[in-house]
Length: 271
Image (cartoon, rainbow, N blue to C red; front, top):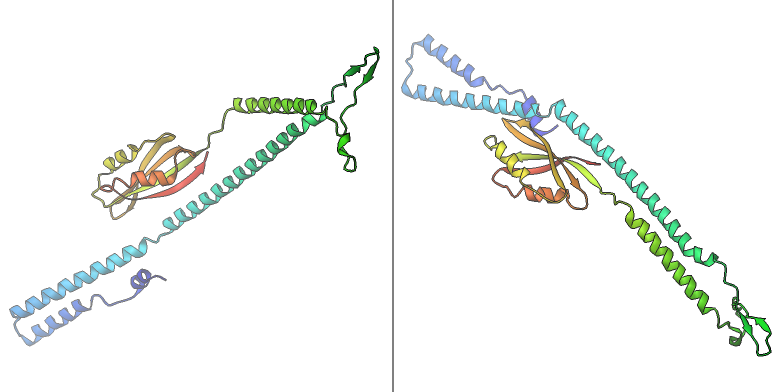
């Protein structure tokens, strides 16, 4: 139990000075003693003290009533909103992992495909007597063979394989470039609080909407009562995640320090 709740529930005899004053007047009337100016001043002070105590009691009761079930319900709603947002983020991460795995598989297939190309037939080398002999094709070099057995005619095939690999990678890059890029966006609900109940809320909203940036779009807004005649501005906006963040919005809005006391993120959802 907090200090405010304890004081609100404490049973104090705030009206005791009134009863004391009534008792004193009763005995004065019984005894017939006149009331002098000093007693009148003392009675006025006691009445002021009693009124001050009543005001304190009402303030404590008002503070205790602020912890109402409505505030608890709003807190529960915000917690549920954060849980849904967390689930959506997990889903996005899983989708990104799946897309990355597929991309790695495709790159691995493209890297292995040149090796499966059949080698070109070996050209025939003519002799001076008119006969021809088939040229030896390159073969894998064994570790126990001498350096003299290395095939010197395999360089052409390596160059062709490299050219084919580069061509396929280039075609893959062109196909990927033609696909439209997915722009990640988010919907943000901001709570902008003024300094007091005398703040011009229309001017405050005008200052907030004056914040402009690439990838920022302001939406609907409304005034929500906070207490003691103070209202906060609740405004929605849509942003592109790569261009605008919550830190940028809070920094720009709090620059209007004559109207804005603080800025809070009430809700944040991926689109």
